[in-house]
Image (tube, rainbow, N blue to C red):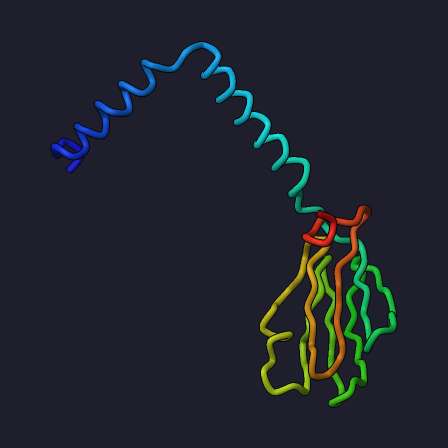
Length: 138
């Protein structure tokens, strides 16, 4: 397959294109690649979270450290939900809603991650030392 006429033609076109590049073209290509790598490293870091903030409706219910192991029971609009905190992670362990999307979200570990039980009006968000960028920042 790699020696097919189509691949050979593609290789010849690529070789012809790279031979036509001037020094400035290579400089721009390398500089832009390095710029993309730098921006990816600085803007999209996966900072580990230090705290979990739990909201009930539009109010902050509580903020807990992730350095402890505990289960939090919260009474929401539909009933009781359970949030588990263990080994620097947090998740919805139990929820009275029918879809269980919040429970299927699983363990959250990085700052900025969130799980929301919309029918029960309970949400949790992991907080880090700095606020991560999201689409609202642009």
